[in-house]
Length: 95
Image 1 (cartoon, rainbow, N blue to C red):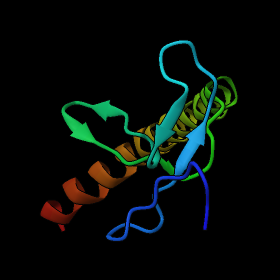
Image 2: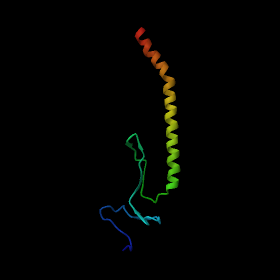
Image 3: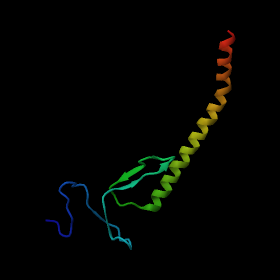
Image 4: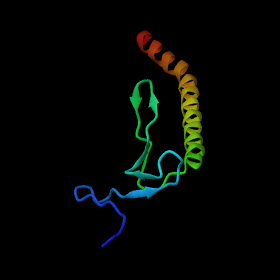
């Protein structure tokens, strides 16, 4: 027998997480992070552990900065390849 514990038979994985916040002392369920970009929802993280918002913010920021740098590099590469692709396409009509 577990004292002072709420047990859910339907969802055995849901258990109370004591956080000690001023508004709510106990949280239940998963912590999720869902960024919205242009109206599209992305499930970035799901965790059943206690969440440290400060560390999560740093990790998420680093992840998104790396993603933006990757996209910018891909756009740069595509822009460099575009003139040669257009030239090949144009020459295909004259051949």
